[in-house]
Length: 261
Image 1 (tube, rainbow, N blue to C red):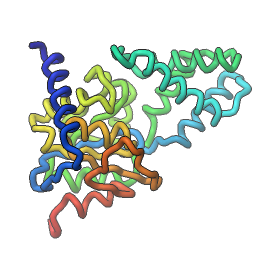
Image 2 (cartoon, helix red, strand yellow):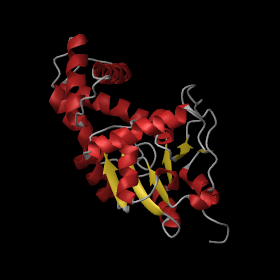
Image 3 (cartoon, helix red, strand yellow):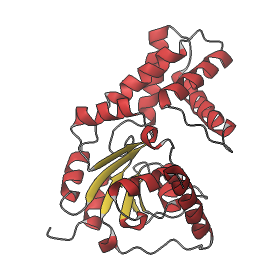
Image 4 (tube, rainbow, N blue to C red):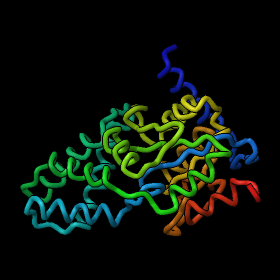
């Protein structure tokens, strides 16, 4: 069996196991041996307002008469539709290629004379330049003596690694959706992370800000999920309760590091 076939079968087994149990699994934190983080919105300070500002800059750059917030909503809708077109037989695309398709469709529907690839490359450049949250470095370094530290992000390698280098963020393992050929919440990407860490999924805690990719995804793969819910959002119905719910990365430390250490 090929590695990809093995991972796919493992994901199917995990889904079947999850479906057979309605209770969120009880996890002993001493059993956690690695902490993995989402990138943007969790460690990297680039959230929805920044995307809207970027849309405004794209409009100014290209001389387009459009409302930035509306353009962002349409861009998100185009993303959802693009993924739904290949739902039964997923086709992986780099983010810049997918963004170009989304911009092209939005520009066409809005009758805007926009350059889709220029817009996609501009968005990529903004993500490469994004700053880390102030708490990111201290939290990672406080956890490092106790756990292996990893990053798992829905991102292309070029802008993700440029961003990590710019912010001086270092991990034992970095895995992008481009490397894995899958995007969260697909369990395959989380299983690939476990493989790279050399640990069973149950030994990994995954922390992220978006409940569907960052709570539902790791739960499907058998990991422990920590929801970094800065905005105080309500949990979607189809997302299982996270093992931890915090308002900042700093709130993870008393939950993960023994007192006095």
